Image 1 (cartoon, rainbow, N blue to C red):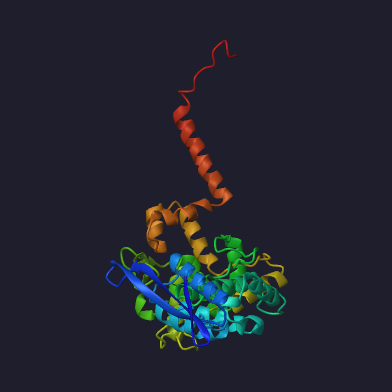
Image 2: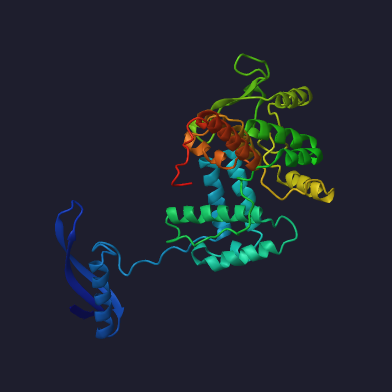
Amino acid sequence: MAVYKHGKKYWYKFKWSAPGNEGAKETFVIRRNAHATNKRDAEDAEREHRRALRLGEIHPLDPWPKPPAPQAPTLREFSKRFEEFAGVHTKESTANFYKECMRRILLFPTMADTALDTITGEAITKYTKWRQAQKKGNSVAAINAEMRTVRRLFNLAEEWGIISKAPAIHELPGQKGRERVLSFEEEAAYLRYASGTLRDMTILAVDTGLRPESELFPLEWPNVRLQADRESPYGYIHVAKGKTDSAVRNVPLTMRAKMVLEARKSANGHSRYVFPGEGRSGHIVSIQHPHERTIKRTKLANDAKLEPFEFYCWRHTFGTRCAESGMDKFTLARLMGHSSPRIAERYYIHVTEPHVMAGVGRFHEYLAARQIESVPVASEAIQ
């Protein structure tokens, strides 16, 4: 080690070989102020510098000691950048979803005003407990939506190099998934207590399988055709854009779906949207509250006693009913806007027990008609 004193401070000097700007190995002369007043501390400083070079943490031309990393922004500060990113790189409905979730998350100051790089999984668990203690809007689905939002935010912060690693974020158990299939009796009970707009949305959702946020809520009248043609006796809805190229499609209407649209056309035909709203988008972006109220009304009236479910389940119910009716998976994939029939196959898993038994009955009849003369007679030995 070449340690020497210059003035009142010790310095060190050594040579180090490393790839240069053009890739060829070069020898660099490194001279640094150890900022030490005794030789041993200066040697320690040189030893630490050599260690960083050997491990590839720095290049000989990099400053040393390494400048301190910039302080990470707080969750509240970074949320503005996150919302700007979502506004540019996601659909309007998704950006609105993130914005609403962040509004609720930032109500918890313990986490909102903490630097991102100091927020741990334990801190997020404290937030979920705080949310569960709220009197309103504390459903498992709502809290899990916030968990997905904050997870996306931290992943973006990691991607941009603002934090070294995103904390582990876990959703709460017990959420009713999107794959529930509602019976016709449950549908009838729900429609009896749904408000006019929610009732119309539900009929269209369960009779067409449109994706609620991206296809049903922003549905525009120019994409609705109520005139009958050879392929669609009751008209159809043209889905002009969606989450994938396969989402672009024509979805035939049922008779009652056509009646709903005709009534809305007569009442709201002046609007660009089938379901106009008061927000900036011009259309309804959420029906969560009226949906939850409708389920509660069925329970209060002791009518069907609907268990909580996501509105998206109407789309899954549509897919399952199509499968039960005997529709092939290729047609179903096209109607649902899926890129592959494999995705549509999941709806065949949820066919109801009566439908399965009816299918088994037809199978037994098929066998009976063909095996009656081919049943082998038991041999004397077996008898």
